[in-house]
Amino acid sequence: MSALAHWLEEEGIAATLIALVRPHAEKIRPPRALWVPFELGRPLGPPNDAAFQRKVLAAALRLLDSAGPPGTIVDYDEDDPDGADDPNWVCPLPGGGADLAAEVAAVRPHYDRAVARFGRTTVGLSDVSIELASAFLAAYAVDESAERPRTGMAPASLMRFCADDVKAYYLEALGSGEGSPSSRQMMDWFWNQTIAAQTIKTIMNGSVASADKQRQALGAKSIVPGAYQ
Image (cartoon, helix red, strand yellow):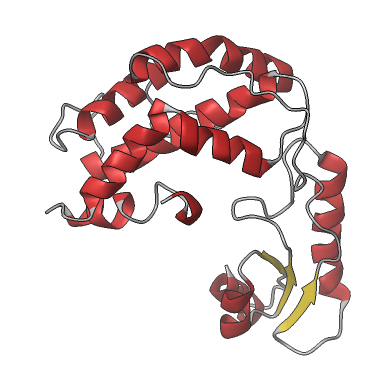
């Protein structure tokens, strides 16, 4: 995005951006940037907090009026309000189970309730049902030549999209219960207590020595956050 901002400025279009990784912005020096102290994937802060997200976006847009030199980076002065753990939160989802298929089925009513509550979902990158996506991951973890639930996509790319869908499916389902768990609480539960996470980690570990270069790039580095590898 920093490089794109340079190109836009060269074309006569003023550009501002939100930076999550400050060293990257400092090295590439975009025309102007707002650095935010939020976790990766949340440039505007916590989900479902439209008021806070508008504040962050407005702060980034205000930089367009600044007269600072190119490469100016301004720190956002508020922490993520979702960063504190909720001591009263109890996970509404079942963890573990007989196998991945059973676990996915047990999560289904919680996921459906969360979608009804918020009116949206980010599940769908793989363009297959969550049941087929999770079944493919379970098979791929054992054999990377496992039959794919759809064609027109390389096995490793489909694996990545299926993994993203499964993660979103579980994490969105957590929104069906009471309380306000922090992102860390939700991620800790998913990565430490579910068969889905164990399956994705198995794929990650097997990707390192795979002859499929795309699987090496995607599976070994992109499907499990560094804190949980």
